[in-house]
Image 1 (cartoon, one colour):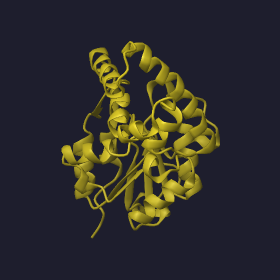
Image 2 (cartoon, helix red, strand yellow; image 1 turned 90 degrees about the horizontal axis):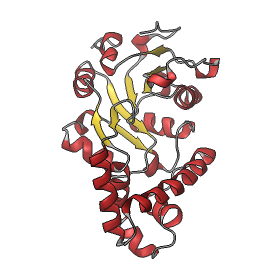
Image 3 (tube, one colour; image 1 turned 45 degrees about the vertical axis):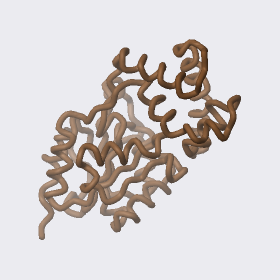
Image 4 (cartoon, one colour; image 1 turned 180 degrees about the vertical axis):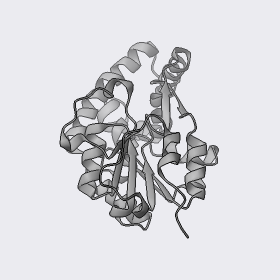
Amino acid sequence: MDAVNSVNIANMKAIFLDVGNTLRILLKEEPHRAAARLEIAKLVGTQEDPDSFVAELDRRYKIYRKWAFDNMREASEKELWTRWLLPDYPAETIASLSAPLTFQFRQSMGRRVVAEGGAETIIELYKRGYVLGIISNVITEREIPEWLEEDGLAKYFKSVMLSSVFGIRKPDAAIYLEAANRAEVTPEECVYVGDNFARDVEGTRNAGFGMIIIMPDKKDKEMELTPEQTPDMVIERLTDLLSIFPPIAA
């Protein structure tokens, strides 16, 4: 772990986490991905080869992603499928299938599992008195809340901000500020734990969060950082948070 730069940890009352590559990791298991591609083809009712069909969805998704990044906006599931991914299919039918299509499209990228020690870290931070939240750029509206419920973790999070529901993506400061507002804490009392030096640091700083911690991908560990991309701390794993944040004094 890198040392904290000019941050008073004692002032921190809330810890927000990213989901992808932070709280959950992606396992690119081909059998899992192939089954999802087949399910997408079945849902849509196409006779086209599932691999080719989803490859075209991937191409269209990249176009959508550029729009989302450029505008710091996120489409709802219905808009994603009717406007961007399957505009050549009947809109009413595709809109009604948007939730399962989004779920299977994400599964076609791989299987997502909780990061090692993730659940234990969340529970312990909660016991130590921290308000917990999630701020994540995702195209799904239901997958994250349903996963939290299924794993028994929903009760630990006071604020769950998903770009697909809020309509605004990181690094726009608005999504961070709304997350803090819903958690009933000031931005200065908030920590954000993410994985992206550029996006996560910029947005958090602009929102006035008190502390930013990055748990980077292997490929990003050797990045040459600008001052705007430099977090207060870099960690290797989520469990490192337990060495940083002591119990909040009563």
